Image (cartoon, rainbow, N blue to C red; front, side, top):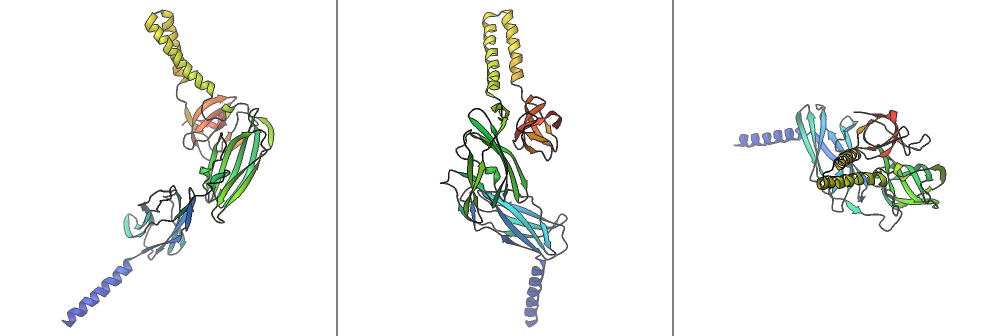
Length: 356
């Protein structure tokens, strides 16, 4: 009986040791914020401690989240030490009642799963900022640098300004100025921890400067950015040069061609005269021509995108890789395009345009 009892104890000890030894992956949060803000891009750093060298990769899965967007779910793990790996995931909360996802990480050897570990998601404190500030731009960043700005006459009453800013750990895609009717994003570029924004807006021609604020989550305070509106000589000739949609005149042409075609079609049915048949066919061709969908192509890598179809026009930005675009208009050796994937709008030189 004693031998049997001792055998059972030894067996339990052996199994416990083997179970402990079989655990090869341990997860923990290395960095997680105490408080997040509406539309803030915030970082969560996950640490993986691995007790075996016999593995090939780590695979992450996310589940059970609510009211939060994961920006980089496919971010690769980085080796910090022989047994330590880390991954930085970026989130954006869209609602006060949000919860981070459960993070499940598999340790793989080829297609075989060696071990699996999980971090349960948690809720964080949530705050809204800038509610009472008419100058708040929805921007949350640790630092903002106004790199460049340029103001030109837009029409007799208004001026157009383009700003180029860098922001550290920010949500530049949410940038918006209050009490400005005409404004928009020209380009957004993410360079790791720094985001670049090229933005345009229209103000009264007499306005001498514009001040917007952003929220710094490190200092927990609103910061001012002042943009001088120094008018330069180059005139923006027409609003349609900047508008991604067709001009009012172009829209009228499209609608009018369809209406005239409809009128002559009624006359053909009613009068049945040859002249009406001819005119109906003519306006049918015109209506089809004006309402045909725009052609598509690509903007070649390293091409410049301009604000106007002129040689001395301001460059909005340069295309770092081929971008699929829709053609809106052609003028003076330039082509007006709108990005299919990211929605940028501008003019490119004809030689910068290619077909798929």
